[in-house]
Image (tube, rainbow, N blue to C red; front, top):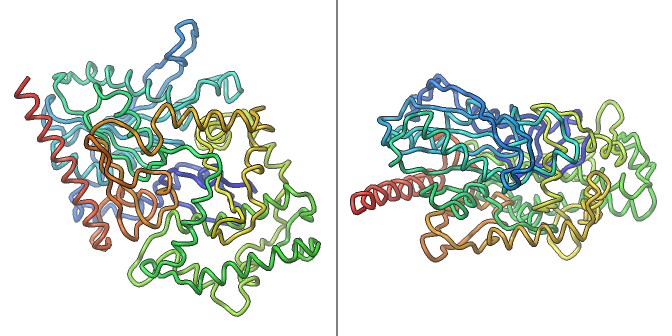
Length: 496
């Protein structure tokens, strides 16, 4: 079992006792397809104005390991995707789809709302995988001397190099309008790319983008509680009360020293007397509810949240929790075992644990706590110190340095009050990550769309006839902004 910081990545979470969650709540990039893309039957894609298998091809670009120090004589190869099926001419727009903290797949690049808009506007679709994820890695593995080159700044520089390469490789006119798309962490990258490289990209659609770094991310679980209480997704105040009751009983047992009973009830391999083992146990318990909110989907008269509420709204919610989690073989909640996995330097395309936690320790924080002063439904032992221990033990990064780097990230990018033009922030009211995004229109054409009842990156999926009216309206609003940008770009070209 691995402990959890639930991911900002736009992926699906399917919780089992055998499969635990890595830093943004995923184990392989296949989960991404199961949530956003495989939920659509390829035989029915014509209904959504998309082709089931548009021709696409991939390649690898050699990139400098360090764009900012020419004395570092190291390189790596970075995966890219090209979809020119909808591209009308070498003068038409380019839609650049950004990879985040997982593998970037064919399905992700070729399908989705951005692909529908590409077909409408005759645009080229390009995708670039994030360095150190998927198949874009250094041969040396994940030793700290290599991880020092893993940062959002280096990835933005990768994007700038890729842009120049693509222009030449595909024979573009040099007069193309580039729009960048991303969701979750990649959504933040999308916004930052426009803000830091405005001469290279005309506009950005940043979905579920946590642009404000924050070490103690208390608001995450506050939104989770609000989402489980929201009738629009079949939650209720009674549901929240039942979840609180279940976790409250665990806290009472902890205070009474009934660790043997907890071990027996949940069949843990450890007796939970070590504080960090108990925190690891508590973190895993809460992660299923967190993931349910983050990736909630409404299906007719039910939703993921509604289904979870049905499980928990029983006379004894604690026993419902036990039944939900108790495995047939003992459940490893050892913090030391987790750290052993976190320090594994072996690179595999589907593994993201060590890389992403390194980024949280060196740039973002994003640690989802359950502090006593909040309306969190879970256990207060999951505090920021627990997460900061990971940084110290796995990467030798002190708590003070984590906080300093989080502050630097906000100073460097502008947090949730950036300055620039033509960035559209899209968020859903059920998604806990909206708390770190931009939730108001800012000066100079920085806009936001807040979609009622939708979860993490839900707007990015292909349109579905069963989508809620709010989601349909949200996508139409996104399409209008993108269309206006393209019209504006053409008008500017005529006057230059």
